[in-house]
Structure formats: structure tokens, C-alpha cells
Length: 120
Image (cartoon, rainbow, N blue to C red; front, side, top):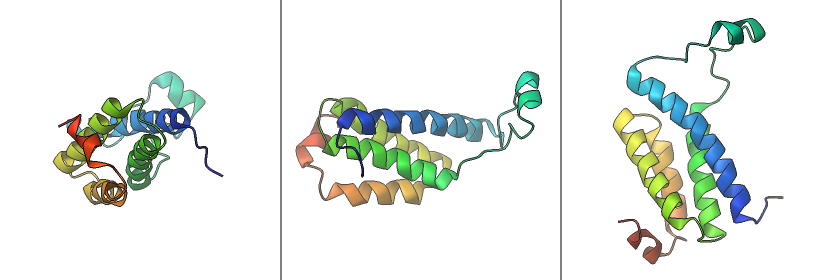
């Protein structure tokens, strides 16, 4: 069962967002994977390998933010600004833009129009 708490959805999405930002930064710089430090390499021999399905990471990040928004509007400005920024970054980098757009479209029917006015 999913939690009904806005904060739980928000903080989970923010955690996923941080992981996503790292991979988007790498894509911008042209690297494939982060170069792990020597200490990390010794502790984890496969530290440079991405353990995430990036397509699902984009989907779950956007979904988490929008689910938090449907459970309360305490963080509305941050959530909607970040969702718009993620959509822009995905489009600009050609980084699973279809998944981000389809996830936003899924929630568009239930999102009140006035919510978007506060960020536009």
C-alpha cells in the first residue's frame, strides 16, 4: 500500500531526483559514467556501473513529485518548477523525454489548472 503522506512522496522523489541530476550532469559533460574515486573502486569494484534503469528513474521521479502534489499543496512551487525543469532538461538532452512527457500527461487530467498558474 502506498503512503498517503505528501512529505513521503516528496522526499522520495527528491532522492530520486538527486540521482537523476548526477546522470544528467554526466550526459551534459559527455561522460558515460562517473569516475569513481580510488577508495570507492577498492570497496566496490563495479562502482562506475549505473545500477539504475534511467528510463524508470525519470518516470518514478516525475511520478513521485506529481503524486506528492496530489496529496497536498504545501510544496507546490518547488514541485511544479522542478517538474517543468525536468521536462525541459529531458527534452534538451534527449534523455528519455518521451517518458517524462507521458508521465506529465498522465497526471495532467487530474491536476487543477490554477496550480500551473503559480509557476508560469
